[in-house]
Image (cartoon, rainbow, N blue to C red; front, side):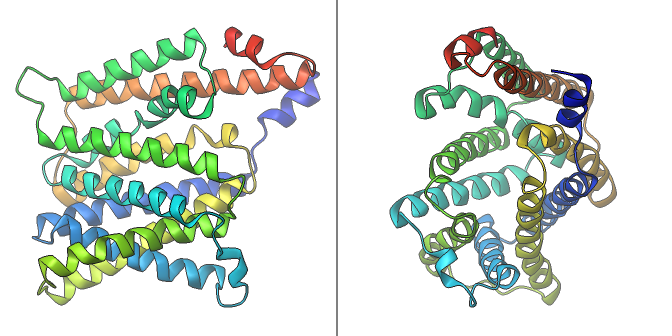
Length: 313
C-alpha cells in the first residue's frame, strides 16, 4: 500500500471524533447520575426502568418514528426481546455495582468488555482469534485481577455485579452483530429501549411506585436523555468513520469518569485501580491495532484466505 493509501487509512473525520467524545461525556453523565440517585435511595430497578423509558421516547423523537414507522419494524421480535433483556441485565448489574464501587472502578472493569467479546466471537460468530489476541485477552484479565484483587479483602459484591455487567453486555454486542444484517439500525436502537421498558415494568409495579423528591425525579428523567443522546451520537460517529478508526476513543471516558468521581463524590481511584485500568487499556488498544493491521493486509492481498490471515494475527 502506497503512502497515500496509508494516509487515507489513518484519516478520521473530525466530526466523527467529536461525536465519539460527546458520546462518552454523555455516558459519564449517565453513570454519575445513576450512582447519585441509587445512593440517594432510588432502587436500581426503578432507576433502570426510568432510564429505558426515557430513552425510548427520545429515540422516537430523534428519529421521528411517526413519519416512517416501517423503519422500526423488527425482522425477529423474539431476538429483539432477548437482546433487550441482555441490555436490561447489563444496566441493572451496573447500577448495583455503582452502589459500592467508585465510578473509576466500574469503568475500568467495563473496559475489559472488548476482550470478552473477542473470546466469545469464536464460538458464537465463528470469528477466530489468533494466539497474539488470546495473549492480549489474558493480559487484560490480569488487569481485572489487579483492580479486584481477590483474596486480599478488596473483592466484593460490587465487583461481581461489574463483571456480570461486562459478561451480559458482551452477549448483547454479539447478538447485535448477528442481527445487524437483518434488522434496521432504527429497530435495533428502538427495541434496545422498548424491550427493557416492557420487561422491567412488572417488577417495577410489584415493588410499588416510589415517593421521591422533585429533584430526584428530574435526575431520573435525565438518565433517559443521557442514554438516548449518547447512543444517537455513537450511531452518528460510526456512520462517518470505521469502527477500527474510532476504537481508541472510548478510553477517553476514563478522564471524564475520574473527574466526575472527584467533583461529585470526592473520590479518586487508588493506585491499584489506575494500574489495572492501564493494563486493560493497553491490552484493548493492542487488539484493535492488530485488527486494523489485518484489515489493511486483507485489502492489500485480495486473494488471501481469511484463516491464514487470522493465524498471522
